[in-house]
Image (cartoon, rainbow, N blue to C red; front, side, top):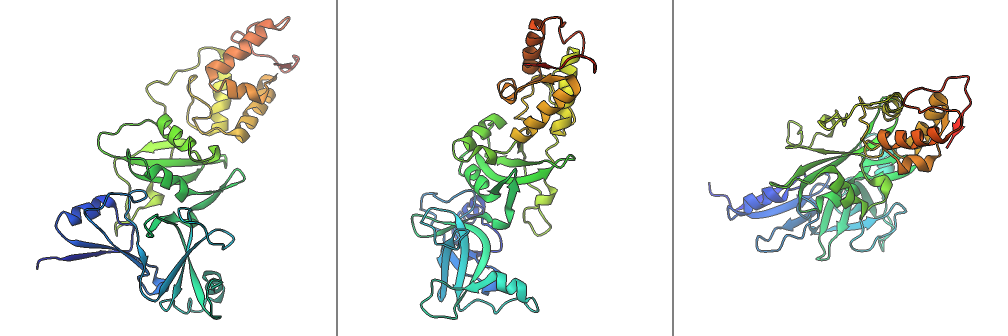
Length: 351
């Protein structure tokens, strides 16, 4: 039978899919709503003639349906201004009464409505991160349960994804946190690019560096042709490849004993398979805490006290070894570190 209308829900509607549907002269609606609000809470009729102003790779989720209210709030449950990302709360007659035999979860997710004129009204905390667009429609940005704590900072992975998804070069972006064998955590960004776009990892970090704090810039950038999906077609985050950083064609092996020692220490601290002497410590996932750990290992193993700023100025094995060798040559009675390592019974040298 000839199709006239397509209703899409259950997952973010990719713009590329909506464009294909509208090419068939279909009336395309994007629907959003969790089961707890029974069941569609917002809807959006796509306009094929409208300019593409949506955030990221998915279409807007629209405005509330009849007898439904929506609010966007911050962590303190205060309303946020238009354009600011926050958690979506839903109220209205569609709310369920709660979870069967789970009063604790019901109390956590179904809260009193502080914005209602009448008492007894409730709101459902969706856990979804959204933003109110200038045209009054809502954009879905991701899940709040993708919030992580990394080196003392709370990070919304959806905010990083949203910044990346705004780039015209990016078709889809996903950000994850991985834990290394040593227990350190690091951010990894996975990008599926638009056809004929070939940015490198340094460019991606530069994009993010202008819009988010440094601690939100992923140390690992991976480019994928496609993302793994679950059997029902949703993104399977657990199937994303681990950022193990195999050595590339430009890998340069150590040339001296000092470079070999520094390479071994850096490899151990970063928990990677191998490090080339021209690989940047911070580009490989290093951060201030790991930098402190590395200079401590250098002191314990090589009996060389290196001030932390030196590592930031010389973040590669080659540069750090050059710095140390120059200082060693200047030290009275010491030979070049490339020819001999300091013994346990020798005096510790600071630079």
